[in-house]
Figure (cartoon, rainbow, N blue to C red):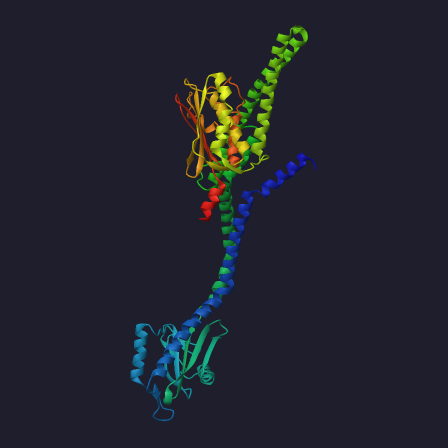
Length: 519
């Protein structure tokens, strides 16, 4: 498949596999899942949960009333003669009324039935109509209601309680009426046993569940439509900054380095936009530096090449047997060739150091001694140019670094200082111990560096302080920066216009640091 076809395929997939559509799909699926759970709970779990709640309520009432009977030290009721009406214990029933008053017992909407061991009625409270246990009949509104205290249904439940100790059942009729029944056996000590049965009518929750099931499809469709619209708007709002970033990145890839992203978000997307803009600034500045590099290098190459060619042609065509002229012209050729070699070597050195190809070979040595050796090599140059290098390195300062790389750094900084000497013609190389480090400073008394140039002074090919036309490639400080970063040393520059500039770095001693850590 050609590259054009691949791009077309990616573009076609991008519409449906974009982050925006993925957010919409996830949001809609979550809404559908929630609605499905609501549907399931309302249709399948509503009635069981409701019945469980009613059972717990009735069971609590039965336990409370049975506990009161068992705690009574007298018969709840007794019969003077066979088949006679039971005589109630007034004190006990007064306690039941008090429990109903303070909330321990709640017989509202309940049918309460208490019978003795002969399965005959002792007491009851009827607040259910129609009561399926006592087979209530009559006209509720007319006030004519008949209740069978000892109906066959309630007698069967009393018998089940006496036999099994408890009962829990739902009874119903063909018309759909339902009643939950909970009963328990209460032992009244030597006075016998009593069956305590409490029941209540079950609301037709199943019918409510059916109605909800019928309504849920319409609710599902409406809420899903709202979810689709909301997710579309939300995903659009969330992905708009990413779309802007993508478009800006494409423009930058096409060479438009002026593009910036304006994102008002203060979250991670906003921080990403800020980082993108920062990256765009750096890329634009790098592009500018590359253009300056081409201009500088082309100028630096063109001049010596022109001189080399011109003098070589002069030697060939005009000089003839004049040995002095030939020697001078060949010296010019050699000097310009050296300039070309220096430029090429600087570019290659920066490339090796910046890419990490050349790693520092650390050894422990005295930085003051190295500075003294480097300073001695400038004696002849200073005498020739009428300047003076002052060395201030009286205190030994042990460091762990690559001596050859540190020597390059010193030569770069000293060479830079020689090109910016002040009226006194003095530049200083200083080494002092500071906080366990060796602080190396190269100071000149020249024109200084403008504050706006300071942040970029170590960048490759960057020139400041009106350096146009001066000798050099603009790579020395860049090489210095790469070497010091490779060692992990702190470095910087301090400058005041009209007074001079001080380049500095702080070299550490790894063995000393390890000893401090062990302590």
